[in-house]
Amino acid sequence: MKVVSLPQPGGCACGAVRYRLNAAPLLAFVCHCHDCQSRTGSAFSLTLVIQTADFHHDGLVEPMRRTTHSGREVEHGNCAHCRVPVFAHALIAPGFMSLRAGTLDDASWVAPIVQTFVESAIPWAVIPGVRAVTWEEFDYVALGREWAASAPRFA
Ligand SMILES: [Zn+2]
Ligand SMILES: [Zn+2]
Image (cartoon, rainbow, N blue to C red):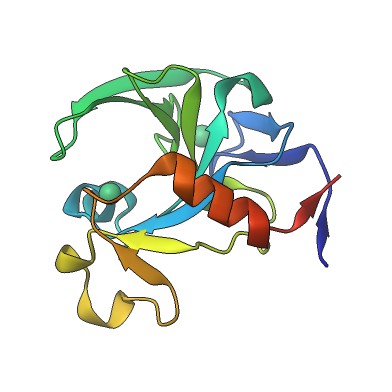
């Protein structure tokens, strides 16, 4: 089984924001919603759900608040210099964060177990072999257990 070393380093595109993920993430998933498409400028977002306590960053982050179309108020942490979105958290769940997986120095171990908002996916971008769940059925706890069972080992 693949072993992923901790901490996992990463950062924004310009290098002003650097971070360390100090513990195993709770879940990896893909979102095809239009917010994610426009924010990333790409087909979908690849997100790790992590505990806020497991994350440490240096460098100036500019908070940007937005309401997602699922109605949650989310604060995004964008690099104040290059504006790359690095992480986000929902205001109702301050103990948890979303980390943009592509900002890891090495994201090769990040394999999503589910994809959501498939109804707004760019058709070719629907990932074969990754289960689609609607946002209504998206259960962080149950999916987290499932992810832990198939995730790499973190050490
Ligand atoms: Zn930057
Ligand atoms: Zn999304």
